[in-house]
Length: 336
Image (tube, rainbow, N blue to C red; front, side, top):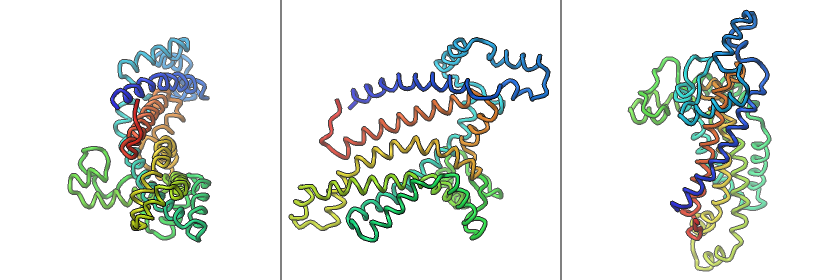
């Protein structure tokens, strides 16, 4: 497994290099001049030229790229002109909020979609199966921004069940002591129950909104995988031995049906990171989403490039972890 892991890590290098090149080129074709954005529309030409020189934008494109690549090689991911801080500092401040939202979304998707898929497969063509298919179809089709606005309108404006969609914790409470940056986990570790309750309440709606599409896909994949497995010989043999139906489903069928579902969950991680940008904007969640949106509006290249690169590294890492988990679920899988 160690050799396989090294091989996969080596295969990530060309993929990440390609992402660096493509992101650099695409960021340079964005409309708007960063120097004018920073100086203001009415700024004198001399001021704009001075800012452009300071940002290195007066140099040829290939020199800008090699300068950017050299900084990356030294561990420097750039400077955010619209915040006045280094990009690393901004990401360290905001990334835990996005990570907490993404983890909560993945957990909700697993806890809801996998049981729904199992029930649909074991009760094929029943009313529950039809309901699950309708649920999956709606979840896959509804845009996140529309769903988020409907959640806020129904659960905050009409019913009053949810807190105001403003941040990660109530404004009259202090955030928990900083340990990991994840408010729910930090509240538990520090024993701050008030902060724990408030952070969970603020997390629920954005996490459900973000996980809806993933829930739909995972439920469909679990159902399809289970339907393929429950008709195989080893499942019939397990039933013929007189095992309980729950043992047949959960110990034999589900374990063998989990690999396609795990693959989908790994692929969905990238979707959730991208979807978090929209969700965070709607719920005023202080994560990377709002930061990237502000960076795009300000034509600030370094944060856009850094976010894309960090997302790509996480996406590759998660998919490598999923591939390694395959071997734990199915001992027949060998790594070469």
